[in-house]
Length: 410
Image (cartoon, rainbow, N blue to C red; front, side, top):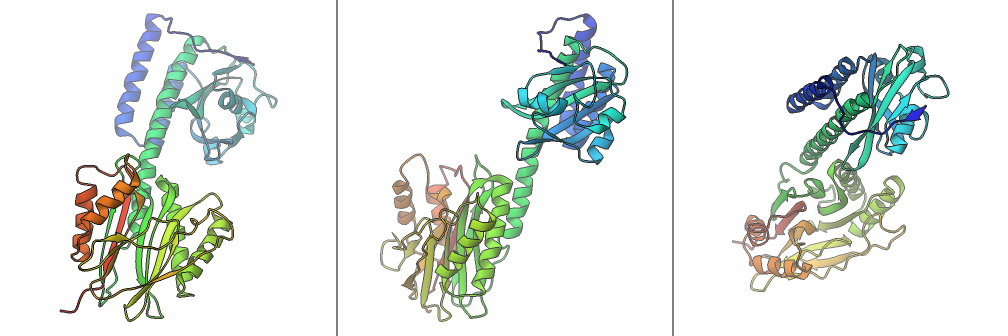
């Protein structure tokens, strides 16, 4: 077994032409194929160009500890069986661990992990790392059933394919992750608010321009006891994982809200659930309940930014709802609740940090927000907040807003 570095292009007219052909093929494939079809197409082409009997792509799993057979030409059984190779073990595992090409002139049980390679009669192999933005994301290897020595030119060709496959895989995976997160987010955010006689409620959600979709959410629901539940929260992190955790937290909060009207008790149970089943997750949450007579609102704040109190005839101000620790931050954290009157004309404006956090101090964002909320109905308040903070300075982080108001009698 010997490691082989990648030399600069040397070549003959034939090798230059092969590189040109391969580049043309991969560029065309990138423009029209999905990830699975793209990888399969590349493997068929590379087998033809290198006169190899097999070609396989193994991608790192989310833990980074194992390679998983993802696409193959000539060794499709590896993909069907979901072959896994620990990083650092066997042929592909060594390529991933060293991030260097590797040539194997002799194949047996001491040099490869996959029994399928032995059953296929592979006698020689060439493997290269798939690298994107400086990180190994997988391994591409080819094999021959007849004895041969893979050359530096073979390595160069294979490395070119691996680079393109890595970039395409990461780009398409990111696109899929974003699309899936978007679909999940849309399915979890209420598409239509419940009818709440005597209350005026409006909501907004905007994905960030830089980070895209994440774990921000809002919720409004009625409970059997007659109280109205209102929640807003922000899961740490971005993308599909944050959206999935957000969905679990939202569902758990609703379930606990069915058992008690005490918002501090709801967040205590939610924190205990996250500590047990989502040990790496953390979220800020405000959960509030509005009494059936609509004259009082009781809130518990798990590390979230304070809502803005909007009162007729007075400047808007940050409410004095002291935050406890975020959900998932510390086992057994104490949760408290604050009760506020909700008189006719009063309202509260809830939001996530993407609305007010910029390069300037966050106090500037608070000042701009409170100055913008001069009254009006819930829809007007959401519009005013967006005009004041997002019109000329789009949010880089995602933003959720929820405005509620108890209208004055006509």
